[in-house]
Image (tube, helix red, strand yellow):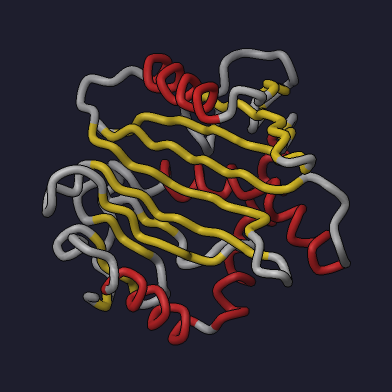
Length: 242
């Protein structure tokens, strides 16, 4: 889990996050990234009036203001998710992932935004922790997924994240161990949930070793994207409607 114990380390982590995010976009090329992501959104039912794709490939949720990155350093945008009644936009997600050379999924990250006007952070966090326990009965809690400040200190409410709760689990599946991270925040009547699951066994090669480092940073990058956009009036951007 990212351990940001001083303001200097927070600043350094944010600088690295910005670089990694830029690398993710540059590695694909903005035009290609935009076209790819717009095609994914266009092929997803019920996205009209709910999602748009920005000129740089980011996926914009119109109801909440959530701006999902066009790509993360080690996982690509896989799906736009719309739950609940069509054209409502009150329960959505941006789904990312990466497969290994054999086509098996090794890393998955999803950012959810759900409108819950009167939800409290603690209540929302406990609800999602219960979902993890039901989905993975063998999961073992190993501590918070993101630490801001000294370990064992106050509840995480430091900048730049604001108030949030997180948990990290070790999940054995078929003899392979996965890390499963849960991060929850509440902003402007929206519950923001980040779920990330990735393999923790020895990387197969140097490329996967670098990707594994990015996997561990993914929840913090996703949280920054979510809390930095929901409830924040964003400037007008060029978008490509799917």
